[in-house]
Image (cartoon, rainbow, N blue to C red; front, top):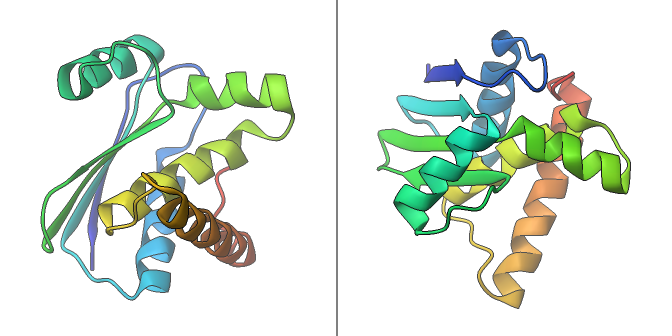
Length: 143
């Protein structure tokens, strides 16, 4: 069983932390991956900017960051609910579904998916869609 550590340090979007582990477990199951540990941080904009600046030399806010470790401790995913809120205000949709996408995206990065060129970006988008459909079927999308 995977230990899923969740830290919610933001106050922009009410989230029950208990919703995160089933989402993470569903992504790992669909990918056929077993690991001992994964960490998820739900960060506010200031914290997201600080982490982005520290690790990527870019102080701007971003939706998602991933920090891979190894095959045992998969790594950390950091997402910013405020960015999801802002995105849906501009483009429509649901902030919880958008945040679910950010979590899936970050987990896929930890699992080796990339989006740095056109071909890998297409594969990432297909994987995101497959996972979001699976999460919807399982009732594991954030809400």
